[in-house]
Image: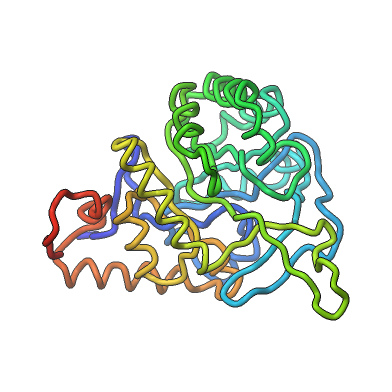
Length: 308
């Protein structure tokens, strides 16, 4: 019996662990280190309509158990992705999530229509990247445009669409806009905007000055966001991510309400870490005589003394 098996939109998923968008590119190098087919799912690096060269260097700073990055959605565009990468990704026997980013509703619609016939499962709209001057998090400041992006994207496909948000002060409002316009789920959370200064020069280290903070220290914010959205939207599928470095982190996000668990920055430090998390989560569940779905949203049960 597979204690880790879970279901989403009537689709069986072998385990809840997916690779978050970004740190592992589009998995070509990662596939030489681990068996991608053992994962519950993979999320591509965010793809845009046109190629993007990204931000100027320096654009990555190492932190303790984390990173500060300002990559700026560097990618070769949707046409290159279709010509060179989608076929390889189709061959993986796991959930395939395509992350896309754009400036307006037409960009998202264009990309979805181009790849919708391929063997992919979900889309993730990157609405919260803090490292671009247009699109990304700037979309969240224009509710009318945000609504159009979500509505137009959802009308372009029958596949589920997840919306990726960060640690937003009006997160409940944004999720409500998403659900109203047809989104199937949300991904929580993206990196948080941050900054690091070189104390020898007094200047910001990143060329763009600010970047996205990821790593173990954002886990409490991720747990908070997942918990409060689960409280408001009891049946909305949530992909939880942010500071997952071991099975205890993953279980905490699941108990807050996450249906799937994304692993990102930790993979850059140890590409095999996800296998350890999968193995240790299965051991934990076995020791409690539970399966993964038993623990999802466990922290929302109205009792003060439950014991797993």
